[in-house]
Image: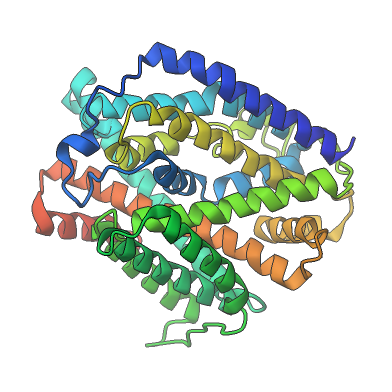
Length: 435
């Protein structure tokens, strides 16, 4: 079977899901733009900051995406075959994951922007709140630890790491400048987009020309030094106003994802690729674990992920300007993540059994596959790999700072700490374990 046919069917199903099923869900939620949203009611300039749907979509999309819809589908495809993985992604995204994200977002907004844990306290009591909050907070700690290690590993990778580190650093600085231009200079969003999005493309190319390498310091190897720098970034990002870093970084990061999806889909649809990897491999993984339930654990982001509910009820619900925006942000962003998962799975589907690439780590399989898709349009393979690896790092960056901010929110809910010192203290406590 050709990848063209598979991708076309997936696109049609996702389009029908958004046009038909999300409309049914939206009507059941009785969305009403006359209802004031928490972002507009509180609007404190730090955490509650109303944003236009097209601006917030990119930030939410990049926050929920991370590495999950890349690594998960690749591993599941390798272990069980691309058939089970693809069916779970499509059915899960349309009927479960997108509804979950949509409902979490609306539910939080209807409760003054409270987190899922606070809503649990309202309906299930104090003990349930404490138990659930502890579970979520520790889960976020795990996310921060895992993604910090993944990011630092990508920065010290011998061939492309220095370039990815340089591009990532410039990308964050670019987001800060964009935030200042939008807020202080009142620059129109369309003009900021015209200026800063091409600059993002430029840093993909320029990063490889000025690689950033950090030597061992104080007896610590470079990867550990990067870990500490990344955690320092997480602290700063968590306490900054939304408008200064999180919103513009997410908006620009969204264009990374749009570019990735555009190149990936175009490469699949026009590249003439065939699905060579087996449709079904077996009922157990190489480690002997069964397809049920391992498939659903391996592919969470891309089909249905509880982490999305934390993001929706944490940062996103505090930025939605109108209730009707929830449909495109909550439901639509999940379908876009499903496309990311399908493209990632395609990097396995295109390979024949026995191909040496299948023995690589998931991020390398992803980078090689996406580079092959992009190379069909005459873009040199080295630049394409750099783009793929920077996209991977961008996914992780976006989730890292959001996870830290969410951990800070939860810690403040638990302790009641408020004000600037409350933000500083809660962030330090959240980052203490990863450090």
